[in-house]
Image (cartoon, rainbow, N blue to C red; front, side, top):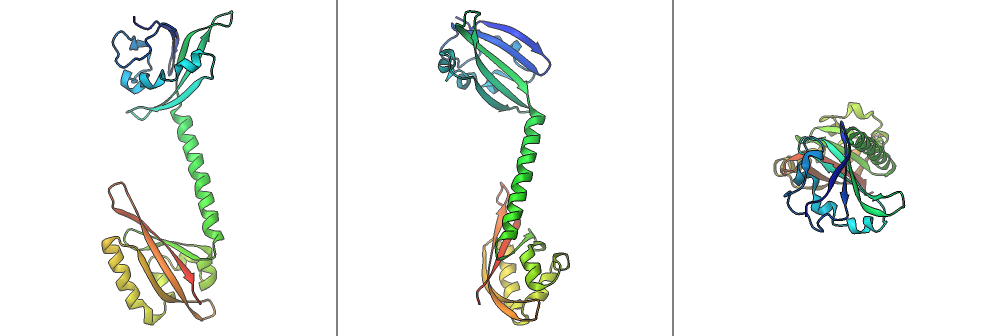
Length: 231
């Protein structure tokens, strides 16, 4: 028998319908299912009904409602809620399935999460005792942490691009640039040692490492590195 799809309401980006307890235990095709009550742009396959109703027995037995967020092909995000449908006598006689568009809420949530994660990362970078830095895919420095500024005695903005090389011991620069050029050409990790001038003119040896961040195609997007004082 086909499931009983009785729309409770259908308004704008919100749609809700009721399924009675007589709906098939496994719905794997859209045969006999009224899809007119799905939100605009949501297909039967998008709704993943088999997954939706896989745990519905618990909801029918009086368990908690189930919520899931669904990403559509057009970029919209819907929140699906499956709740028990109860009579005035408190008997569970079916399910109420509600779809609400929450695209903006989800995007705002992700933005706030990214901002918190960025702030946490920045705090961590500034807390470690190492000199830390990053470069773009071409090897041009675009970030130096406060420890680098404190150690060299110069503002980070004056050492971006290739200006940081002025803090490297002249006898170490040629070998360093040869290794760095190889890493930029191959994407290999950098691991080397060289001397960096301190704010008072003292040269100290640092163990230096750098790794590449890649995109989904394997192309280098950025480099992240650190210098550890070994003296």
